[in-house]
Image (cartoon, rainbow, N blue to C red; front, side, top):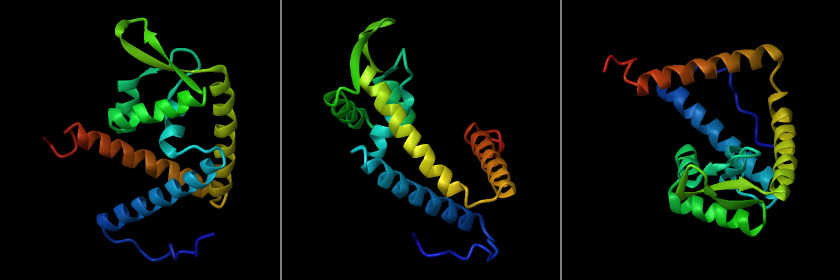
Length: 159
């Protein structure tokens, strides 16, 4: 368990908020790695599994775009999952030139096992916050997300 951090000190600048968000992201990423290690998965493989629905799957380019990873990285991720027989590539019915990645029956089973374990681990972490703190965190994160989305769309800064 990491050492306790004094979170009662007032945060004064946007940069400090950003630094805290970044620290939390890095800690969550490390925590994910620790949980997923038991299943011999890395975070890219896990996030790829999360994107795949039970029937239609996704195009490689869609996976790449959604995970903000290069096409070559996604190809390696899919190659490893395919080697394990968790996913397979099939022709895209809408475009013969494209391939879709779908979960195999084994992949569906493994995805559920890993997702359940990951959810349980996250529940343990977030249970350290009381209900009111969790609701506040939820509201703040949603507000920050909306502001960022507006800003990126050029609506917040007047661009």
